[in-house]
Image 1 (cartoon, helix red, strand yellow):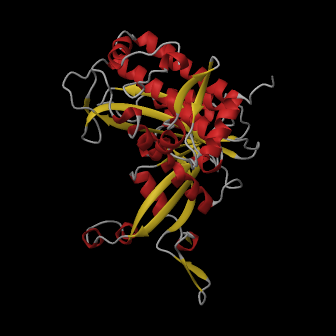
Image 2 (image 1 turned 180 degrees about the vertical axis):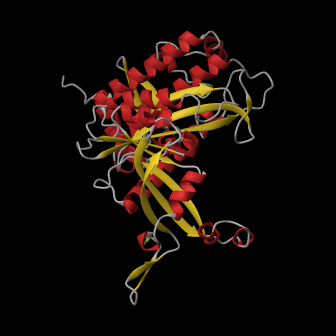
Length: 390
């Protein structure tokens, strides 16, 4: 708001608040108001998806990926309500983010929640996954849903809630004794090499030379729970050579002396995704880290208020802005479809135009030979429509 200062602002907007006035307004929000804004953000996304194909049009058999993760937004003031030291050791507030995406399309934010800084990652994960799936289904897609998460969300309630809402789950596992026992039971001939893009093909052995291998085994998760709460699935394991000599000579199990293992528990049928494809699909969960980085490069660079409810409202407004910017990139087409928020802001939104009035009409005088004139014109035409004939 501190950047939007222009003599023609009153012609473009019904009202324009000063930054201090906007801050005062946000501080009036209570918990109930924040929940109303959260509902408005969800309804806004649904209406936006009716106008713009935010995640494309995946077929019934294709996957729609719902990724869940949290991030710490660092704060420095001592008056920030809810600030604390979380798992990262950084003093801040914890933002839980859920995104939806499909192959070839940039993600959109389908759920968001601000929590105190000391909150554990898995706190409220089950209800958050349910909310993320409900909003994702409202986008009008008919694909299969796959929820992806890291090891912090490897718990029975989170996985069971995803399955209850008709989605599959893919979650990184912690190396507990049960997982280690399942890994050591995998026969050596079951391991197959991952074909990385930088791998070298050996003509003599007719194999791909790579330092990573994958294998899988049937696995029943949460076996310590009662039988009705146990969840059968697949354990996808990726291993790479252990290069730390100190670990190699330590008193570990033989298998864990030579390799480092990364396990993923998945409920996706092997007929849909094989071992290698499942491993690659789960590793693409890192796309949510890019979304977190984009938010921190923009509206979540800081949380502007010492009031927790005001900052929670700010988070919801930030996600509305993110999704709206993403829709603008899709309408502009071309390279903007998957562009980052910073690129979209600098090339489509912060337009070097002069606002003028002529014949009681507002005109935008754009620069000549502007490199992004064509995508900007596509965006403007999509939103505004062509001029009407006299």
